[in-house]
Image (cartoon, rainbow, N blue to C red; front, side, top):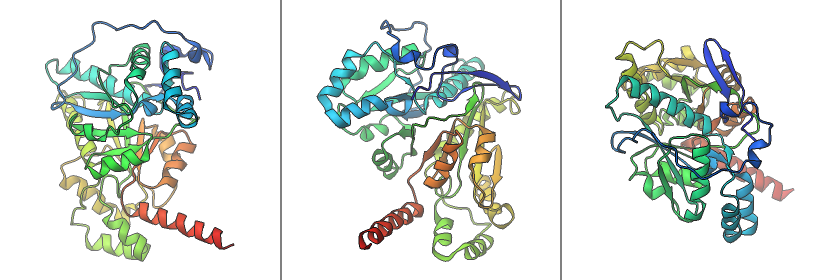
Length: 374
């Protein structure tokens, strides 16, 4: 898949670019990047990265930042030695963008505005490349980062070992990976994490405003209410939410990331830029507004958190609404919502947390048992 066929347009006053692309490459043929040979270089005059303890740290794996599908196939089919050999032989050829690319570019755009408003502040996004790649692959990754003009100075290459142990050392606020097992491990360590998927179809997204969309239950909130729904059905769920509407829900795995985004939003508000803030957040939930929306909104208020837009869909598909929002990233705990959003071009991530994961595993096991009996 080539994600580098960039297109730029203007919709509603916002500059948009093809998700996963670099607007500088908009005139290239679809497969041109694959044949580019880079001269290894180190760009100058880059801003100084913030100290990890002051920054909002986003750890991304190389397989979600860049499209490494071909290389992954070589590793899986031919083994580590052939994989390393291939990477070294092609280290001057850049990887094309992966599903996290536009998200990272949007983070950098926010940083540029923050540095203009607060030149001495280190409250910025800091992207760390977190990968279990061998250090031999590092040169190709560095060359690719320089080619795409990304500002990523911190790398963690663990040579085949799991990078999860380093996440806390980097003060990680969010971890994105293509490896679901590593994401689950990070969540167990109390770190916000989600699994990303490489898709052929990705919608245009804003170049000037970071847009992040969240599901509610088992993402921002705990899975308390979802457990009631799974166990007792919709009517009991509505009764439970009505009875507990003044009791805040417990926090879910992505609450801390929303909190971090809100902290940066307030820096823009402090400069009179509430209406022009380059960060916008969305709650996109299957909850009904009248029947169960009150508790969700009161929970956010009790946390002192704002959400810019709240969409209560009452069980309707999320994909069409996300297609209109065009977020850089959307988080949901249920794969059918992730898949439905991805089919319409949204970069949707799976948060493997809560009761829905156990129900999904049971359904798969039941299907396997049923098939075996036939």
